[in-house]
Image (tube, rainbow, N blue to C red):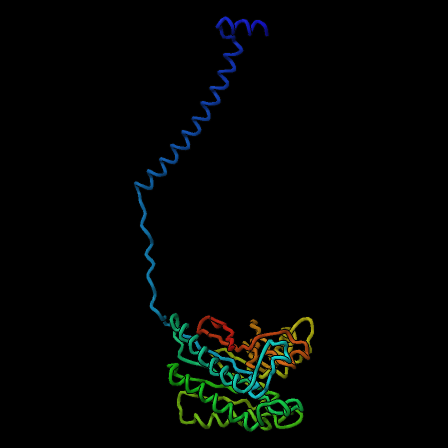
Length: 339
């Protein structure tokens, strides 16, 4: 060590120092060479792009409407038009009476028509299906309804006739539809008997009479076709697929933890043993659910004292709008919140 220090003081360089410097410079050379290789590869890539170039792929806009078509479906159930809900009875979560019902019905048809206009920007919508699935009226089946309803069953029927014709006339005048199909099912509230009957249930239903009066009113309108159920289950065809319609009171559900989906699927399985359907639409439970096997509809009434009593989950007043495509079936699902 003393010799190395002495040599450095004399200005000389030892062999050991020369070897160390060679190692350092060799490493720096290799690093510089690697950097140069990377730069050379990048320059070659740039040169290739500049030499060959590229052209953007042209994507042309399509026409506002294509050759396919779809059918708009509005599901109406559980309006309970003359039922009264006082805010203080439901912790201010809802309020309902005949006046609110009338405004909600108008909003429902207006919104459905706007949704059709939106969908028509992409596809032809020549047909409209208006599903009337029961409990549009509350009637006066129970003592509390006798006390609180806005009127009698006969007055409620007249109210519904006026508002339903108003909605259908809106679709006829401003919808531009070639055909409006109106399938109808009675509910459990519209009955005129104390207990719901299995056989001949529809002929004891005030709603069945309501539908018949509507059908007579539009008998001379070629664009409107009524299809009134004679039993609990009703079937219609949409683009070759069978759709089952029912009010929903035939589905037995008592609030199990599995939810409405399990009893609905069990009921559909049994009904399919008779007539198999591709889709089932029902109401009754005031619950909105979209499922591959079924569509459960909400209510126009909304949260009520009865909902609190049976511990039903809160759900705002809503009905269902769906767009069924000729090729792809379910194209759109929109809950319509009426207030």
